[in-house]
Length: 402
Image (cartoon, rainbow, N blue to C red; front, top):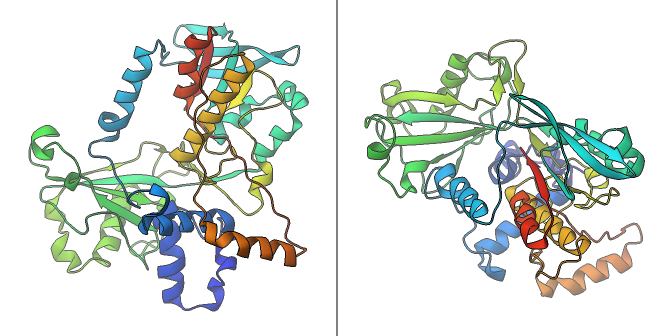
């Protein structure tokens, strides 16, 4: 069932719905409570509580990067993989997976100079679900019909907007949510966490803060124009966001005047903004009720095809980098096993469950015959990990990531 139904939101007050249902889901997991399933939301809520209590070594419940994502995470990771012998082929688009003798025999890849066929011992498909579905052709589905379930998975829009300010707007040392506002906005002031001097390092020196926001409800009417975000022009989107912020923060118009907004930036994944052709090129996977049955494991019925993405079954059961990483670890282990390798397996982790609750859960299972426990073994994604194993195993590994 949906999280909204599970917590009985329709029977509760508006404040309950805004603060304990909508704000919780939009802030914690950028999901809509009426679309997300109760199990996913419940597991995430448990993990957040246990992390806050310091149980099982989770650490702080809310942690952020100390630099822009490229500087803090992506560039160092690329450098590390390159040092292990990984070669990145940029500007290449996977267009087809070819099948012969019930295996992936080749992959058609398009570049600026033409199309070529790539062959590999192991193929790791590490792209989002909306990219994976067109690649799972009839030949692949004939070998593993269960992969057709990916067509039933759904996505939604959740994209970023940035306001660059000439003076800091310190709302909170962490994430901020804005209950009661229609576009499900959340924000964070980046510069308070970044190790470099923002003004001296980025831009022309006049910008002192990056006010980074997520917009998770692109289909709700706005307060200024009465239009959904996906119907607004870029100028209207920014004006609407500023208005919703001002209605939420103390002394809104005074704290956030137009004079301190130097510029703005809308995620380029929102294409053709302000036109009837507007589309989101990078939507977010939504774990709707019943979706677990349509999600695959990291290994497939095709012996040399592996899946590494956030839609793969994972113990964390949420569309996150952690879930993707878990899938990647499972792929890595499968490649080691299928190659006859002796390398140590990547470690897999499970969400913490207090042992004190085990007898209660067991009693619940015994006394509720309608409940069928399903052990959730998960796969996840970490294309780099799988590919990094390749040279050590003496095999050729290809990973297509998006």
